[in-house]
Image (cartoon, rainbow, N blue to C red):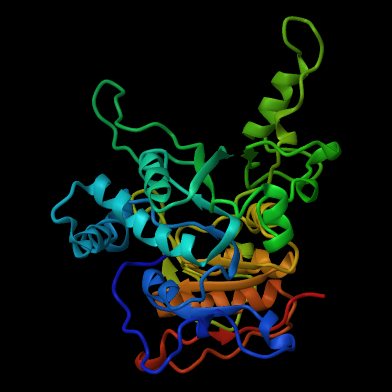
Length: 380
């Protein structure tokens, strides 16, 4: 989670310094976290230095009336000189703003994956396209554990449907020549489809389905949408035989509380209530509200980032993309504005990367808050 508040750039820092330590050795492979506004931080990174961008930005839907998902986005668009815009148009302009910086630091042919909301996804895609990126596809993450946020009205009426999907835009920086030439020059330009084959070795599709949290390895929960889809497919179409089971696209459960808090045992507990009107909440060590499953992020990282490549997440939150990159042996550079989440991200990435210990947080000096700090080691 991040906002669009401006972070002051540290004096005396050379352009591109934050993108990796100079010299050789293992230090340049360590995950690096930066605190600051992603647009400003990326402006300091070296051009054409990132192999892939995998992120979960704000959706611009005013989630829980949070400033970072509404007013801050409109303010950033206004600072761009666009004046007063509608909420959705401001979101599109803002997506173009951070998309421009992503496009600048991405290598030719590098891919970007960004989650969106069905309500504002079209603005996300347009903003990224206006930034100079090519829209290549739309992936769909399907799940069955969503909850309707609508109030109830007389006559059985509501204003929203139960959410069961989130679109993911797949964009690419234009190639440097042909696809073959781009692969040869930069190691980018095509996706790692062979490394992302799913059940029975089938080629991956642009749909990803999630089991219910209560599903076990050997059997599914009674209401699991994936199991119901598979059961329907088993009947065949028009008596012609069994269809391809939908779960073979790719599936993984939504993150459990154990997955959310793993590695954060030494951090303080916070009271957290994701849906104040529907539940009581409780004490947690990772209070981030919009985590994605690590298994899902591993698959996405593996799909678009070449082996050993550098993955950038401009909206790092509590570090799920970084944890996925560590497991998949990709280098990672994460940006997050809110200091408490950097501490959580550091702990989670160290845990999932196999470091064996949680690194101590760096001193919070506002004059140097955009400086990166290494975390643990990658799992070998």
